[in-house]
View 1: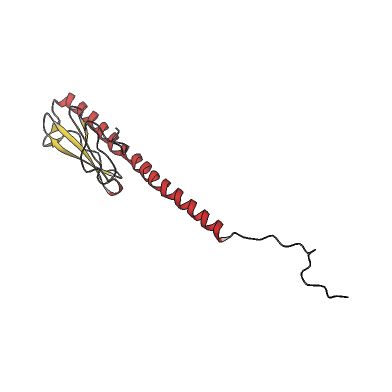
View 2: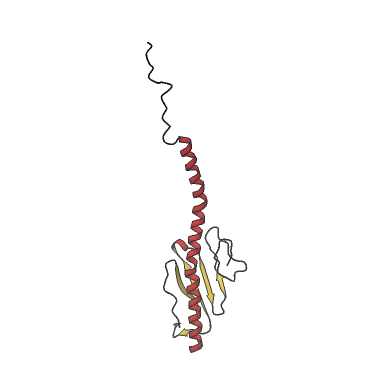
Length: 154
């Protein structure tokens, strides 16, 4: 009787376990491509979400200044504007670049993650986005609004 071989054609083979190197590399490539697209879009989304801090504070302060002017017939209270500029926010500092009896210009200047964003509003309600926006952001044309999107849209 012949000896029985250790690997019999009747013995079922075990299915392969794990992933091949090709499968892992394809998965890594797909994740890399998705990250290259999604991360910049997410960063812009976050940046756009921070802009209302500036625009809402500027608009609110303008309303308070106009109410003060109706009562005092001047934007000044002594040597300072009758309404204090908003307290520095999480991403913007607020200041008056002009403040006299008949005129004011209120400015919001971004810092940290929002550096480069500078918005103004004056006593006539003229809004502007100052130059120096971050890379990839386009100022509006004409510059009579606050830019809120990369393409210069207001």
